[in-house]
Amino acid sequence: MGGLGYAASMEQFSPSALLGFCQEAEAQGFTSIMASDHFNPWVPSQGQSGFVWAFMGALGSVTNLTFGPGVTPPGFRYHPAIIARAAATVEAMYPGRFYLGLRAGAALHEHIV
Image (tube, rainbow, N blue to C red; front, side):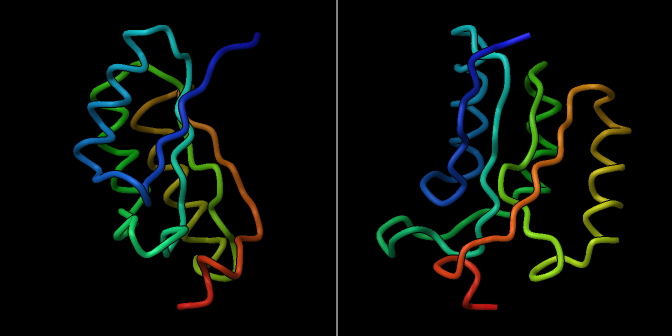
């Protein structure tokens, strides 16, 4: 089943603003949310990146959409066991609505750690 997803850019907007944007996306017919998990923003003018796992806990309570992180990097910033625990917790809170996206990460965002 296909659908239209909304990309929640944690580097570009505050978590509170993004929650509102995600609610509006749901009202407009979007079916999923992909929340970015970067340590640093793309450019300095974007400010700071919020913590995606806290954001997803709030996101699940204000929408009925499928959601997950698109760029969580196992092994570099997070130990795989921490990711597994966080993912299991979010899935237990919002059964069937959470997906786990894994990637290696990008030096642009991860070099700080």
